Length: 357
Image (cartoon, rainbow, N blue to C red):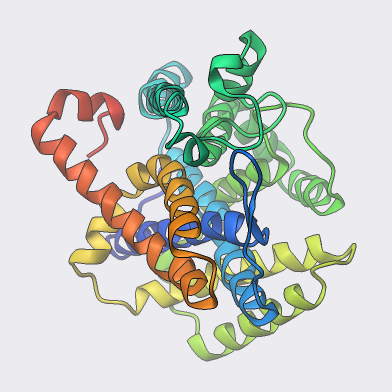
């Protein structure tokens, strides 16, 4: 099977990568500000977030931006299945492009945290109300790397972990879908909408479903170029309605249905939106370094949010700065670090990025 990605498809994918990575950073920004406090050693800092600000952050990060990670799974799957591949070759490639960066990033942060936690002034910014790294046993290290009881130490890396496992079973998934496409489609969505949890620590049900949706796109020759031709006004209007429904049902048992419907509609809306955006240096830069931003941003973001709350206070103005400006600063910082490594440490950069680009 050869799924031909047109030039227009490729341009849309590039722009989607830029949009999705921006949304991912905003998701993780609210992961800290949305709790109403900043967790630090010795206790948290109460943000006393006004309800209007909490709701604004919720709509942006928990509803609008929620399309980003499923979108990355769909695109990753399409790029894998667009041509025939051999399991062994693909697995070795994913070890290089996913597992090696995965372990490098986690090891870096464990070492940095251990060093900074030994400095009294720095310790609050590099720890929560949990055990210090110097107190860890073997299980805590395994948990930090593998995410046995929760996400890995660097939270966004659950994506890389899941994506690697999905690549391991990609041939099996393709075989099942080819044999029983309708039944497989129904079962996948029942699993997702029922809220059942995966018994496998390195596989989330939503990751499985949206990765498989990527193969359905390939199998039935669905192209982003065709989707981008949909009329924008009715799609955007439907998306606004779906966002409002998701918000209205956020604390109910039917939220998971509303949320995933919103993700699907939002995915099409994103395709239409980026197709109407002209490429520029910012979009190309975000797309080029999207993987680097994905694996680097969260821990820097965590430290920056703690520092601003500690030294600048928790006024509404500071919280607005935290939510809107800090993500942009962190993205810029990750890009600068990437460019520096790319030019000054090319050998390490190739290993760090899995020879991407």
